[in-house]
Length: 442
Image 1 (cartoon, rainbow, N blue to C red):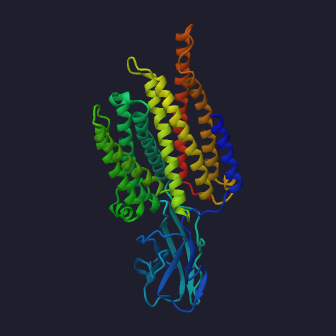
Image 2: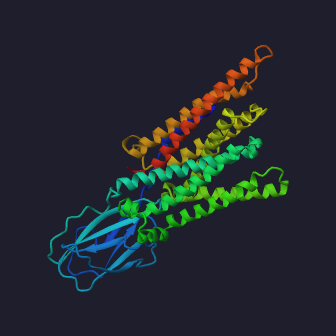
Image 3: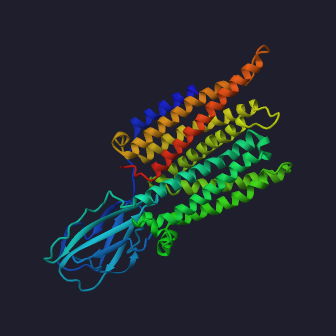
């Protein structure tokens, strides 16, 4: 574990010295008319060019006059072949006056961005404008808290499902342990419940409405139209398939050919679940999306395998099966955890380098502070894990004289260390959930 801590320190230095600019949420690159423009005649449409392709989102652009009356006509559409360009037509024969364009987009990473810009026709007064890009999302605090909680519960569910790797690779006896199986089913239930919650909350989250709007059919339809809503449904379907596979996969005495088939199906559905998280978060805002999404898949998958294995190991340590020797189980998991830790550190560094806009983001923004806290939590996890590793290396056995005392002491230390690791993992997952709803640039 000392080498793992040294690797983490090296990667943190790489992050500090090598951070490169990256995009955050969707931004308006340009607009026609421009902000503050004074026109001699009313335009037939208002168009904006965005920093990313978010598709056509109904009602995302509105134009109002001085009295607040809406003067746009027809739906939002793409006026040309540029996917990032959106427009809305205006009513004909608009009088000389000031007009305010209000926009509300949901970026590719599922977060809302709102703002206004203004233009004038003829000698009319200029409407007060908030500028072309608004830093505020206008999200209701209650909805924001509920959305973050739903993401955290979804992460927790995926981690519990990650314990399947521990069951298959480290502790075959857990296949028939009802407590170990129950943890896996809880994982499926948590992911499914949190996914449904995220789906119904996304409409109010994007529209700036309160919790009373969660079952607004119009908002639910809006969520279904965007990629985020479709990916949530894909996640729900993948988790349902995994829930059906689990009893078959854990059935003892299966022929090798049938077991291999179930394991392959579980890997595919598990990959789809992870992909729905990576494809709805900050990695999709990276210009080189493949790099960030791949790194996020590895990062989250390795966290699930490590933390899920810890939960299963803690369960086995506190209530082992009669006559079960957990020394080889802990030793096998120690090797699996070492690989997962390396993958977490490397992929986490790549993600930070690709997503963080600049070096100063680390100490000047909430996002940077959360990144530092997550790194600190990860480093503390590694330090605690080193204690577990020492107990495992001793094999929970001792010399012939006083062997029972040595076994008892090492088992107690291992239990304590694993319990602390599980608690720290929960905290790190909470920080990860907060990172997903925090713009990298602020």
